[in-house]
Image 1 (tube, rainbow, N blue to C red):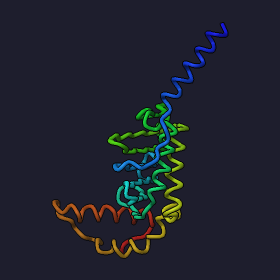
Image 2 (cartoon, helix red, strand yellow):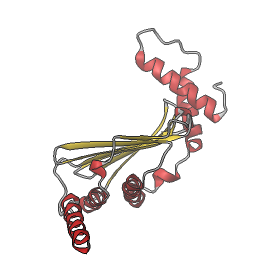
Image 3 (cartoon, one colour):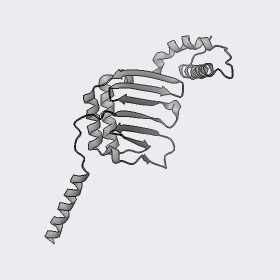
Length: 201
């Protein structure tokens, strides 16, 4: 009986060893991260992040559709490799594509998409947590925080005065049915007007 138990333990260890991927030592040439999170209702806030293998990064913070703040910055290859290591260690590429709690209607969502060695893996959570996902998400967050802490400090109220000046041009303006840019800008201004609580005069 002890012999059978020993055999089973050896088999388990062999299987575990086969499924454990070795820690990567270099960043894939096609490495890219796209991530985001937000409330189920756009007007409650959302954010998105993208970085490629060269370290060129962009972060967007938004409310609704037209209220968007962009931040561009750089991260190092070493930092990207650390995130990749965390993803591999936590079996990110073998997680399910979706995890959700169907009994929660509102709440929030989180998504991470990583491209590496010709494989693109996307994982989204909706009103639920996942420990492996959380560790990758934390690694991404820490990388952003080190290089662009201002993205977490920014508040939309800071731009109200500037937007008031910009939106003054749309006071009483009628956009043609085919003038997509005018219609879009006017709609964006309406969101800012509502958020900032001022009137165009």
